[in-house]
Image (cartoon, rainbow, N blue to C red; front, top):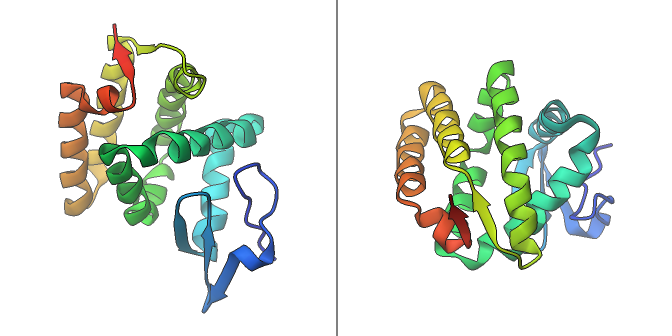
Amino acid sequence: MVKVLGETGTPLPSSDITSVAGKFCFTSLNSTTTMSISDAVSWQRAYEALWGEKKGETLSLLRTFRDNVLTHTEIGRNYISLLYNHSAEILRLLHNPLLSIATGKVIDELLPAIHAVLEGRSATLSRFTVENILSLLNQYERGASPDLKTAIREIKSEVRGGELFRQVKIGIE
């Protein structure tokens, strides 16, 4: 039996989950996701590799940021859609241990700014962190399909131009 965890890390009631032919669909606060059971299990393993014991705390924070900040901006909704549309490919890329480690480190660098935004405080990222984000995107791009490469190039342009950060109220120092 696969348990689907909700925003707080507790299992969702079975009424929030549907399953058909080896796939299941679940609804979170502002989104609906459909994936194969094997992908769901693989994502849980990826989360464990990225954050270990802090997995639940980190995922909860990232989901809150998604639901309370990203869903309220056009660029955020585009990034959420991109992640869900390319989730199987991103998961495959995360099987590379070096990429997985780099991903975890960059997300860890972003967590203080995410906390600040959620708490209504001023948030800033260093130029070093922005360069780390761009470097990470370059690593993903190297193994990506043509569609994902195109999306990554757009994201890199938005990161360089600062549009993403402006829309979610994060400054660059």
